[in-house]
Amino acid sequence: MSRLQAGKQTPTHADLAAWVAAAARPDALPELKGRLTGPETTYRAWRRQVAAGHRARQEQATAETDATQVIRGVETARIPGLFQTPDYARHTFAAAAEFHRTARDVDDPVRARMRRQQALDEPDKTFRFLGPAPLVMPRLPSPSRLPSRRPACSPGRCGVPGRSAGRGGR
Image 1: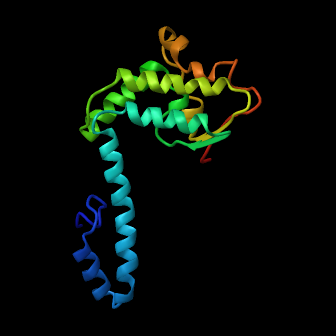
Image 2: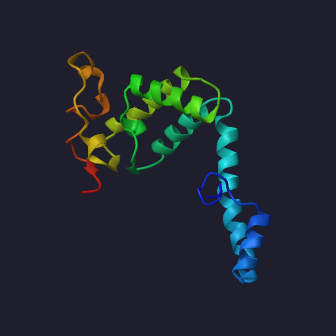
Image 3: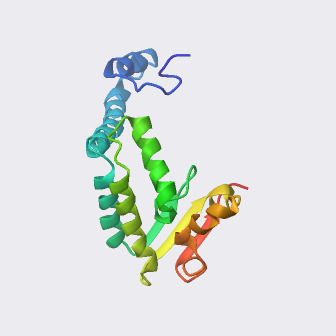
């Protein structure tokens, strides 16, 4: 299986030209080139933004949250940033920096993410998040870790009007 088939590499314009020739659909080449350019441009912009660290992206998310009344999210792999504890966010940023080979700034983006959680206390905002059951109702950690598990979903925040969590799948 090729790297293209496995999704490990994006096709080049030459790959696209070869594919449309093999499929006898040369008319499809301009559309395919356009579809290739969009994600590449988005990815390059994101890489430039996080090259110096994740703080700026977190500040952008805070500004977007401040300007939004209804916030919806779907998360399949981790607890959404709005509901993360500082320890969980710290681990998330450290892992992301290592995986993407970006600056390993952790404290500044964690502080920015925690500031964003202030929006959870604003009565005019509505939050709707969907994710698999283990994210919505995770297994309980050891008793020593329970108090700091998910303060953003403490009884004073979850179960009140404008706050809901659901699970996808079964």
